[in-house]
Length: 170
Length: 315
Image (cartoon, rainbow over all chains, first blue to last red; front, side, top):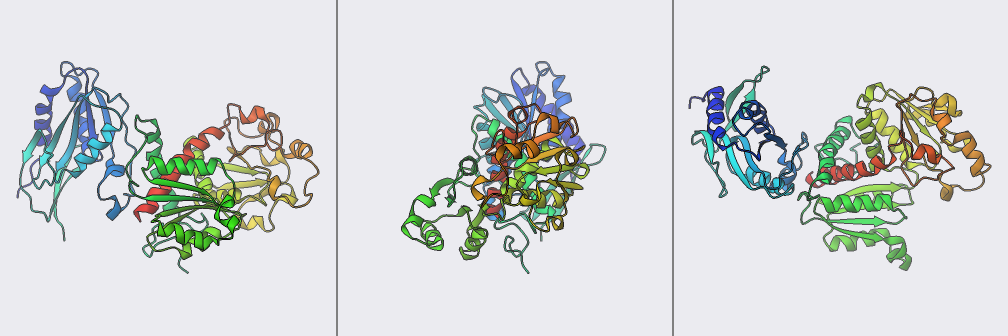
């Protein structure tokens, strides 16, 4: 498979999210790739009408993962930062690569511990197929089907631009 | 020799003492605790990590703060918690510690938090328990109180993030203090360049210098230009015989007053593990003053204990 250009997909993702922005919207990125995307989306989305006071947050779902008992705690757990009131917010949840849906389940569980959002919309850069739960992104910039052995990862250059790597798990 | 606290692949299995733990593990605990601080500020102050696990708090010796914060920490991790004040129950009826442990294991306990007046009690329990069970030392005799040492360095890191640039003074009854020993090991492992102890000779263990500390007997000298003042409680209940003239005399020489604190750097922080003897080791004006971080220590203690429990449960 030819790797998609991450920067082009980022533009597409931003365009697709723009119509969702209204007052009372918050953008929440999932650590780490989703948080990088949210960070760069924010200045773009703030310019959209209604987005002037767009709230932003970061989730690290380590404490909500369903594989804690097999894998333990990740050594680089980062604090979640939700510096706004979740109650009644329209939340756009951002992740880089959508796969099994387990991360999103964990993220939704965590969000609800902050309050009851009015809605959650999931937006991802790539939907790589292989979901294991009845959870799917409403917005994705690129859809593909990868084998279970393949690991698609979003990375970031020092200048902040994005690129993908695709590795075969052995 | 394999450190009894670590698994075969060098991850933390029990927390018995800070002595001998690598910097990597101390930092892992402190970094994880950072993530737990925010949990207390949410609508729902709980995460589901230890859901379905049972934590047994076994207190063979009295404690309020440590017992309560361990209990809150376990509950915020969604564990089921049982707190036993053993001094008032089965031990009084003659049951041995290990029989108590075996009985609680038969009730499917997953983790033991142990406080005991005998040094080494938690070690003995850790050696005895089944492989899936973790043991946390919540204070054993004069030996160690590792979570207190960790919460103290966590508090220091919060207020003074440049650990490699600090001068820290530990003041008071070092001889009887498991807290002091744990603090010294944590500070030196994390690379604090200058740790001082200030105490009368009668309240210092022999060979205390071997722990890598500088010894002072005079408060004004010892507090000069320090960034952190860690006060210790005068342990009246452990004091056999008259090592000190009187509490008033002690306060005059070693009690922390605003006047003595003025020797430290102007932005120095003041810490105390509690419970405080006001007017004995610390003056109320200092304990309640703007440089005091004694209550934040208590709050951070919960996050640090949550971090320890969740790391142990995951390894």
